[in-house]
Amino acid sequence: MDRPELALPQLHAFTVLAEELHFGRAAARLGIAQPPLSQQIARLETKVGHPLFVRGPGRVVLSPAGRELLPSAQRALAGLADGLAAARAVGSGRAGRLRIGFSASLALTVLPGLLRTFRERFPAVELDIREMTTAPQLAALQLAVLHEDAVDIGLLREPPPAGEAGSLGFRTVLTEPFVAVLPSDHPLAARRTVGVGALAEEPFVLLPRAAGPGLYDRITEVCGSVGFAPRIVQHAVEWQTVCALVGAGLGVSLAPASIRRIRLRGVAFRAVEPSTVRTRVAVAWRRDDPNPLVGQLLEVVGTE
Image 1 (cartoon, helix red, strand yellow):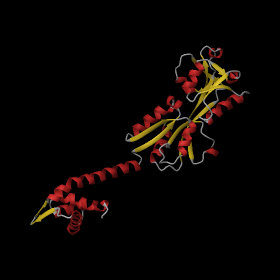
Image 2 (image 1 turned 135 degrees about the horizontal axis):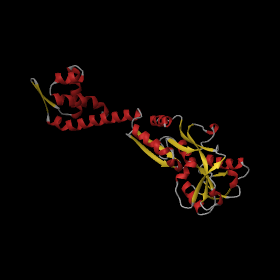
Image 3 (image 1 turned 60 degrees about the vertical axis):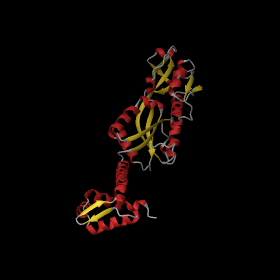
Image 4 (image 1 turned 180 degrees about the vertical axis):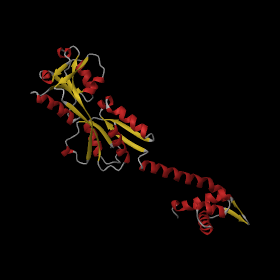
């Protein structure tokens, strides 16, 4: 049995002849001579097993079998044209699907502007946005591209050192200072700035290290630089929960400055000294990812 795709040139010749009802005009439209056109029609009629045209002196009309075939042939050719157009759009990075993982706190900083700019430039792209802490993002970037849990782009805090990057690429998007997160009635909340060392005797509420090893280590490193290790009494996966627990009096925290946009009663945010202490936000991707949309998003990041 003939494979269906082998009939596509014949279907094209058939539909053009059905529209022109004249071999000469149809051949000219197709850019071929009349004998090859006649051969294409003859091959298709052999597949169907019945004549598709009634030929007469100076005239050609569709046979009953031809009239029945024409709508299906037109749909098949239109579907192929749509498929080719869609494939070209995806291949050129103008359409397709882009899976983006992001740390929740970045919804308070770079994420909204980045997504807005990307959508304005590439409105046909489907964005699959997934809220994930840093460690799960890195794991999802290591999965095979076709895996349903994989992501194509990660927006995360404190990426791993260059020596541990492996097949992933990282680009810094921004750096931001830390703030002290305090109960609003805490004595330190009366100050405009708080030295990190002033938190040495305080209980801490922090994200678990498993959620974001780089950020966790950065915070403990900041504390260590002034001579103490934070005494962690409670972990919470989301910064909003960390702030809520601080407001409930369970302890204090050090957090990226963007966390100040979380408005919770009973919580105060204060700049910390030294002010040079900062945390890094980066975009991450697979270096060998064939998806052209990855490069498109990286270009947008570079212009933000």
